[in-house]
Structures are given as C-alpha cells and as structure tokens.
Image (tube, rainbow, N blue to C red; front, side, top):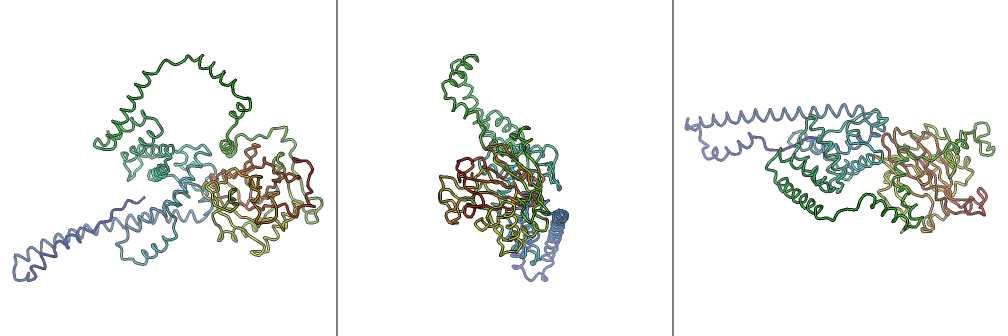
Length: 551
C-alpha cells in the first residue's frame, strides 16, 4: 500500500518566503550588498530545487515500480480472468487496490502536469469499487476461513487447494482485513489477522506499519474476548516498544486492576463441589429433562452441518444405500430425440431422489449463456416470506440474470431440452436464471418451494408452487462451491456441462422438507450456474397427484 504525504516542495516555500523582501528592494542593481544577498538566495533555491528534483525522481521511481508490478500482475490476470479472480485473496486484493491504493496513487501524482492521466483517472474512479465492495470482499475471506477451517497463515501465504495464481498477503493486507473485522466488532477475526500481521512483521517483512499499531489493536481485541491475562501481556509488549503510549499506559492499569479484582473474587468464593458431586448433579439434571429435549440438545445445529458438508465431512451415504444408486443411459421413455443418442444419467441421492445428467450443456452453449447474462447481472434476490416480495439478503451472495427465448433462440432449445428430459411442462416454469458467485459466494440453507406459512410466495405468477428444480453447472470449481442438503447429509459437487434435478413437492402437493439445500461458499475458482424452477400448473397429466401425503 502506498503511503502518501503531500507537501509543497521546499523550494516553493523558500521562494514564497523571499518574495516580500525582494519586492521591498526592487532596485538590487544599485547595491552590491543586496546583490550578494541574492546570490545566497539563489544558492538556497538551487539546493531546494535539487532536493525537489530528487524527490520527483524518487516519486517517479516509486510510480515505475508500481506500474511494473501491476503490468506483470495484469498480464497474468487477464490471461485467465475468472481463474485469477477465483482465488479469494486475488479478489480481495483487487477490491483493495482499486478502492484504496489507486486513490493514494492519484494523490501522489496530483502535482504532475500530465492532466490527461489525472482527469482520466478521476473519471474512471467513479466506476471503481467502493468501501462497501472492499468490506464485502474482506468479509468473504473471513467467511471462507470459518467455513473451511483455514488458519490465517494458509490464506496469507496463498496456499489454498487448486489455486492457479498463488497470491500472498502483505502485512498491510492482513492489517486491513483485521481493521474491517474490528469495525464490525468481530474481535475474534481481528485477533487472528492482527496476530498474522505481527507474525509477518516479526518474520522480517518490510512494511510501513509498525508493531505498536498492531499490538494496540491486538491487545484490545483480546480484551474484548475476555482474556485479560493475554491482553495484559500484549499491552506490556507494546509499552516496551513505546513507553509513552498513553492508551497502553491506561489499559495496563485497568487490566491489572481487573485481574486483581478477579483474583479476589475467586478467593472469596465458597469451596466448589467435588468432581464426583458435580457429575452426580449433572446426571440428575439430565434425568429430569424430557427425552425429546435431551435428543434435541444432541442434534448438530444446521449451520455446523452445512459447513461440515461444504468441507466434505458428515456425508450420510452408507455403502448399502450407495449400492442402490446406478448410472444409466436415459431416453425418458423412448423420447424420439434421445432414442439413438441417450443422455448419461446417474443417481446422486436416494431420499430425496436427486439425479445428475452428464454432458447436457455444451461448452458453446455455456459461453453463449454467460455472454448474454454478464451485462444483466444484478445482486441476487430472495422472496421475503413476510411481504412476498423480492429483496436482497446477506445470506445470498451472488449476482443473477434472467434469460428468455427472446434473448436468443438457443435459450428456447435449452428449455425444451429440460422438458424432454423431465417430462414436465415448461410454459409455466420461471425464466432461466443465470447466477455467478463472487468472492466466497454462497446461498445459505433454504427451500425452493413456498411453505404453508408463506401461502402467497408465488401468487403473482399464478402458476402454483415450485414443483421441481433443475440446476445446470456451467463451470468446474477448483475448491468449494458444492450444493449440499444439510437435513439428509448430501453433497453434490459442480461438474461443468452437467445438471442435477429433484422434486421439491411430493405427488400429493405437500412440500418435501428434506430438499432444504444450500450453495457452499466458493473457496477457489469461479462458479457459474443456471437453474429452472418448474411450477405445478400444467403438470396435472405429466405428474399425476398422489393420494398419500408423502408418496
């Protein structure tokens, strides 16, 4: 990160200070004494001018180094933009560069006479990422760290699985990440990333940051998590480096007072029960609780199950169940289009029944869909169960666009392909939705269908509930990005050109709650998907209603 301090050149200040005396004695030629004064003035001006030239040369050298670095970086990045930005550190640093560092660069060259560059940069900055973008990218990194249980050093060194463009983080990057966490009162991640910044400083990395600043944030973040002893240790380290640091001196006294208070409170406490007595009391309390409540306590929270599945842990497919899953060539009951060229179909899960169709979308079709969607991508929305309207949500981090046959004839062909393979009517289905996930892009656990507590979820469409979901994978993902079903312990990994399909409703029309699913955060790579939400209306003869609620 560039550190900028803009000042008027010394020679300008000196020239301004000399102007009053020079104007008071305009007839210098009449006095040698006055002319000798001018010689000394000129000498000082020449000295200041040389200093200014050296400063400008240093500035240009810094600009040259910056340009060379970015030239090399851009050359690598533009060869594979999606692959490069698929690394979350690269995406975060892009946000940081354009939002922060290019602004510093602009300040550095403001005194330059190259007005074309400055005006162009000023115009372009209107379209640069904002503070909100930089914060969003930082939060995505923290989310990835938690979901995939990554330590700060792994992320900072860029050693992520499947990376093409390894990108280490500087001390400044770690510090900025920690500061964003700090601004959100997220002291846990503030501690992790301030410690990483300190580790890299102690490792000899050159930086404009000093240990005092890092230790100041670190000690306070640790204190906010209730660890007084450690906060006191780091405060003492800070005071060793800067004995006159006022805030640290105050904190030292406060922490020592609080620790003494705690120690006294512990001494005044009555003696604790023996370990055996504590165990007996715990058993007795457990007996008093209803069995159902005891079982509920032992259940894993959905968030934890979701994150475990994203890491490939906790998948509940037993060997016996797996033996009943098959691969086959599929023609959907001798559909004329697929009799001679059937589609490869494989069972992904048994309950709910999820199938994958392989090689169902060609590379050219994928590129066509992406090309149509890119200019239209907007922040993805969700149905608000309270209002029934579309709104943005923090738990869905992606951009989406909607495509119809009017946009390109091939969209109609894709829709027809879905109809041929599922046997379901597409006239009442929603438009083809295309989604691209950003840094750490995800969609937390949700249902595709409208539940009984939101009867008006799709009222404006007039086509009934979402009976089924068809999901195309339009890219491979190097790491992360799985589609998971937390309630049943299923995980399905993206495979370019394939599609997965499942029913959201039983034949009776009741919702299948086991289809609650999520899109895991993309750790490394770029995830493109497109989906078709198929509705009830028009399916009366294609999927007859069942008499049993869960048939």
